[in-house]
Image (cartoon, rainbow, N blue to C red; front, side, top):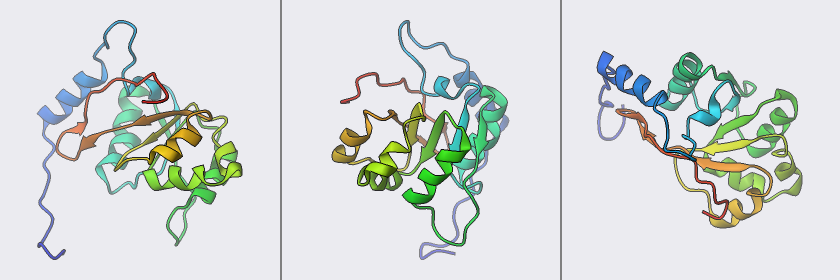
Length: 166
């Protein structure tokens, strides 16, 4: 229980899944790429917890709809940090990663951690903004993509931003 009481229950109906499924298979405008298309048949280093809607969605629904395989970080009694992510990336053989903004910000502060992104095609974050200074350091190592969504609506339909300065 929190200060505000028990969390409100979220009900995912058949309609919710039908709408999400429909979105996964929508064709983007000519010359554009859907944000979820980058995860088709991808190996995703996935740091979203399984108890969170983002974790549940990427580990199950993206696997079903996109053929995306989640590679999970090592179990630990400590919070995940940039050093652990960089170490895992060196062994995980992944094409994409999903992290919180603070991991990318911390990676940007150390050239060795930045270098860990060299084989990652897409660094995806959710849950806030990546500071511009961090993005400027990382944009030459990998493609940076922000995912937006909500527990009630899943990932919002959006397109890949092609300009690395955007």
